[in-house]
Image (tube, rainbow, N blue to C red; front, side):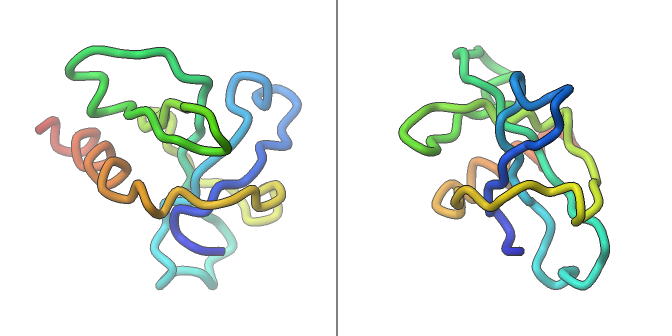
Length: 104
């Protein structure tokens, strides 16, 4: 499991709203039995300050909102199949996490 890999959300209760999750946990902690993930939601434009907190990421030919306030830890057994990566958008993801934690 690599940081910024995208996985299918197999949870039947949330998969329609959040079809994917992004693994944001550093690879240094790959031996842990859990991963920190952020769900992706079908994108709708947002204005400042939400655009920094929930940036639009391009994945699979579509735009998805990174739902940073929904950041969560889940068991590695609960993660669905790998669907790709958004590592090329690392800066937007890191900025959103920093904004969530610090507010600036």
